[in-house]
Image 1 (spheres, rainbow, N blue to C red):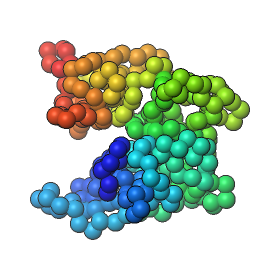
Image 2 (image 1 turned 60 degrees about the horizontal axis):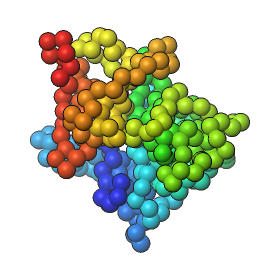
Image 3 (image 1 turned 120 degrees about the horizontal axis):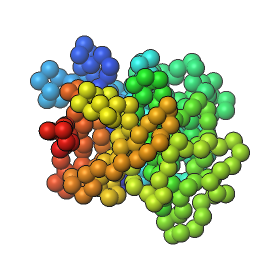
Image 4 (image 1 turned 180 degrees about the vertical axis):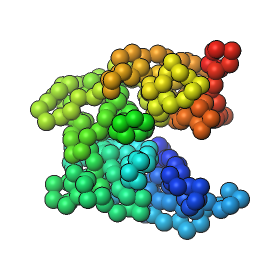
Length: 297
């Protein structure tokens, strides 16, 4: 892998049957020579003593690599049907996200061996890349499976504003860069505005941006008041955001721990029901959050 710009090791998840097969999956920025890179997915078997990975096997590599080191994505989520979902950003080349035959700016779905599920929206390859589930995304750095419905939800960076929560549906276009609730960093308007025919609206958006990274649904006896809500890490404002989810809609927002831990790069629910945060700092930390005397801390 190549650790440069926004690239490097992007995500690591355990196979649902990890206890039996010891298999870990990871996404990373893959060097291709001549300074080109692309997002890739591989898996390996973790040794019993945890010291190394063996049987390394790459199962996906985006065909069109470029010399940019921006917007690789990438988060991995296993669905309970055994499929593997992952995200790729637009690689800093905005128009690519509007091409369903280009993996950049997409949510993708494959089997755990890299094969293509027959019910993918472009499985025949005629109208889009066979791995693509949805397109028109800018740079999704969070993804999570709803614990009840099984739907995959994502969170993606906007530009200057326009960060989005989406629930990607098969074959649909989520608009970037034709529509957005943000503006370019230099202040200019993006695309044609906030809506256009044939393009989906986000479930929720932020303006100004919070620079979201990491996404998790709360399913925990430790946080009964948060049950079913979404937790989003934020690089900007260095905080954790809780989104109140009711009947599949986001109805309220609470901002927590601002400037307490640093830039929150990822958020996960632990097997003990605690919330775990990973910070993106020179002295980065892994932070466990659980109630103490009725207060989170």
